[in-house]
Length: 274
Ligand code: DGL
Image 1 (cartoon, rainbow, N blue to C red):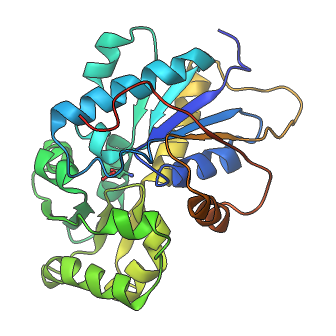
Image 2: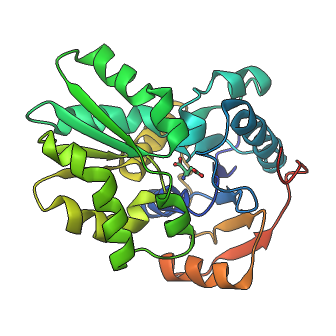
């Protein structure tokens, strides 16, 4: 396989950009193709069947670019496992965000009290709990579904008082359990990190999926001898969104404001809503 082929990343919306940005910094020679399904966000309040259908449509769109790896930068899709995609698209390497984050949380916790916040689909799948408990059955995992946080992030309400109040409504129960580690079980949540930090205080370790996932992607590409080792050539990331109102472009540039980006509108060919 050609090492110059792109890394493809997808999410329900702008949240996966936290992963894309991290990969761009970690692997500056790699080409990045991103797809955010902004026409159908949020995923986390939808059924497993619908989420699977969306993920398949997006993968079909991304494989036109012949990616060397596809990163599922969405916990709602990752919580369904990767086997339904691997079966449909054999030969493609998929990396999810849940496994790397769960392992990082296990390395971080000292008191074995771990909290997880995420969209309803991710929390009800209990995937974090089962991965963590399989490795260490002594760990307690406290989970909380936070359906309002993705819309707040999509609207760019990253650090408002309203955002902090809603976060506090969701996480106060977890803090009462004396958690020392909080998994941000949604790639949108690092966008709200300042507000989350203000609520949880300085001593709780926040697990941001982008960090552990970035390391995992690098490792897998190394193992498969697919890292692009040519001369340093910074590529302009190409970001596709299934809906792109002007005001959202401003939110994106607020978040990823350093270098040139190519932002395009694209459709997976799927229905707007199933
Ligand atoms: N960024 C997605 C995730 O990590 C958000 C899910 C949603 O759209 O509800 O799960």
